[in-house]
Length: 224
Length: 316
Image 1 (cartoon, each protein chain N blue to C red):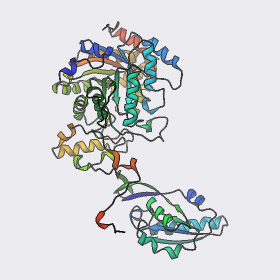
Image 2: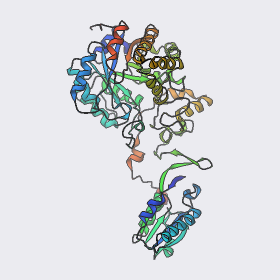
Image 3: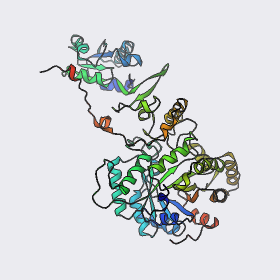
Image 4: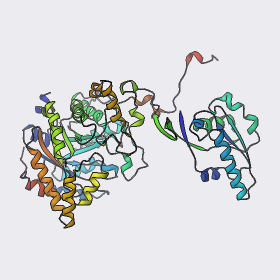
């Protein structure tokens, strides 16, 4: 899933200053699961905005809504009516949702209420870790199912660097060295010989460095 | 792979000396955080004659310093042989190969290939780390440039190729321990002509690693230079132990430095420990030399080299 964290309230307040009618818009997908962009957070954030406006003597109308997915035209079309007389939308979806809103409703100012952080998931209650860098050329089949591109601080492909100690990454003692984990996993699977092979430089043409990337499913594309 | 140890690849002083079977001494010379060449000239004057080649660090610990290639040329002008350090942190494969052509054109013959310390440790932690390739891939790229006259893309290099004596680092104190000899083997297979190890304070663990290395016959395929560094004080020992990634400073060394620092004899004890390490490792099977990393303490090097009876350096 896409993991996103809440922007500081001060920053949100600053973005929205001067707008009279604001819609706080949640998204029912990834960000609901990570407790930052769901219906519950819409209610909380809207209340916070109303309260701060009241305390500061500002007249602001804050309305609330959510859609199942802000990253699909069909779903955001449903809220056209709700937001039509708003002068700003605070989207608490990921950056994709924010852009879909901005593109579909060009006359309304759309602001991000979240910082989209990474693709990952919760490993335990309240703790999220990055798991995929979207490099476009998956190598998990050779690394015991653990991704060194997203989980190694240097995205190394040939094993742990010289800073791996006691299973921890040199960059942070809180981060497991993924290459140590890969080593243990391959050891368990009796595949350690894999680690002896030199992996050549990665072809990054499918990776983030070559954005914007595009995928076409020929069989679904409607002929014009 | 035996020809790897005898065929001259770069013609550097370090290469000729190692291939002639003599014990080599390399030391580190850190470029300044400024544009003043006299700083390097002073360090070079201090180190001249006390080593066979000198490592010019590449923005070590991710702190901005003068370019290792530019500083290397100044060192060369001063009559010393540089080992240019090259990391993958700040450059992609295009920039690295470009810099390698430039370094070779400026007279550099030794290259140490490193992944590089993470930018988080440096003076610009907000910088974007590159890490397009890793150290093993870098070694391979430099070897293919030299031996096959091909760029990393596979395109042919039609002009003169950069001919480097290719070095790599290995840390016997990192984990998983068993992988450390395998990683060395990977670096050798990729093309490492010589190896400089992480600083040794834990001689026992270093010996265990060397046993694995020699059992695998790796010492016959590359030249292994053992890394040493004099500690200055108990504070520095503590810093090394807790803050420098991949460092192993045993309690015994900590205790000796603490006791010596208490009576203001830290530097003397640090040099003594360094000399003891050299004594314990120089006769080990598979050790071809020693690499002295006296970080911002270059004037300790002449004393260490002399006291270790490694002076004067042989002419080749």
